[in-house]
Image 1 (cartoon, rainbow, N blue to C red):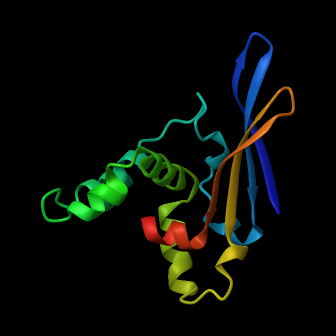
Image 2 (image 1 turned 45 degrees about the vertical axis):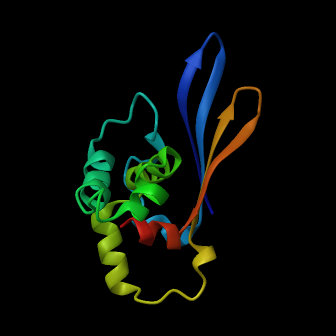
Length: 137
């Protein structure tokens, strides 16, 4: 298992860290800077571009009302999708799919993302597997 932590905030001696636990099965898909997610060090417009391409530009609000209701208008879903786009490299994902047309155990391809603070408190934010990743791409 891959475990990675990165400081995202340091105010008044109170620190917050990204904390990733990722199955080794997904290692080849990770963006080079995935661990910088949501920190001041992260600088990418890729998540916005992919969200626009795969959701906003792909569906029409009038014709695809159910998709808008279930997904696009849901801010939690939007945040989760942009997280996936921040962590998974699109080109690596395309190559992975071409080489792995079937996956027997999707639960063995996962990303657990938490916020960890300087007091040792860990709050899980996302628990994502390959099925959810495939859905948003």
